[in-house]
Image 1 (cartoon, rainbow, N blue to C red):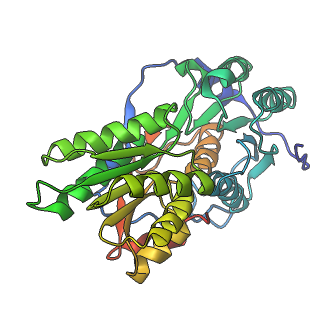
Image 2: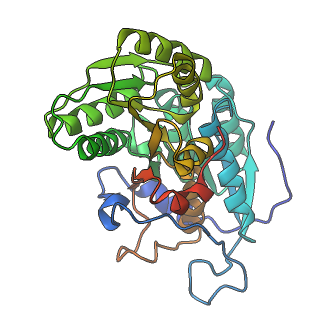
Length: 357
């Protein structure tokens, strides 16, 4: 189901310009531009006609944006769409059309085709399957509609004008570096890992980053299991892990949603001898970290604001604006978000942006 609010039509010259851009432009990594402990902006404040003249927030022509993402069957995924809608609400000049979240690739393809037929000004798309959605994204680009690819990449860079990504490898690196710093001189520390779905590249990237970071301080993953990003699977595999490993010093769980089940298994087993690190950055995890009680002492952020960043990027592209803090005259081709570690010391900087799991 697609909402169809009344719209006004902007010009679309820029859409043609966006399509003309080819692959291979410079990757802009925001992590290179900000210190690792810098907090995100709590107020991503939108623009209105009251914004300063000439600023990116100054009201422009209305931009009609089609938004499609997978079903909200996971706390992080639900937060993606919620944040995108909240961001659009901040702008008087954004008309957002949100397709119902779906894990059916054929349905998501039809949603994008509807946006193309309606001649929206831009499409923000978090594909259920990046490869499967590539042809229809290419079709949109060929129709002069810039596509902003969020989180799961297409397999053809020409299928998107801009891409907003988290940093899965960086998540693993951040978790591993935290373990190294906490382990200190303990070269015999026992490290365990509870991954997500093993067949997914994002899980493989997270595990590789974790192993690479541990290697630098002489540690390795001693016990590893994989869950399925659900509470139930997290509890099941964590129970098996705890039975197989009578002593653990550090445990990294890739995902805070499945972490609800992991923590239940830990409580049921009566284990508290280790430090646990979470992943993604849920509100529950941050509340636990802030309390200082229990084994969960840190989590690694995988931003749930990627859809919101996609909305802002789409607006800039269609209104022919650039990112004001960059020297570049054009919106970058790719933006990769940082994966900071949240601990009791800095949790207040991040908790307001956390998602509910």
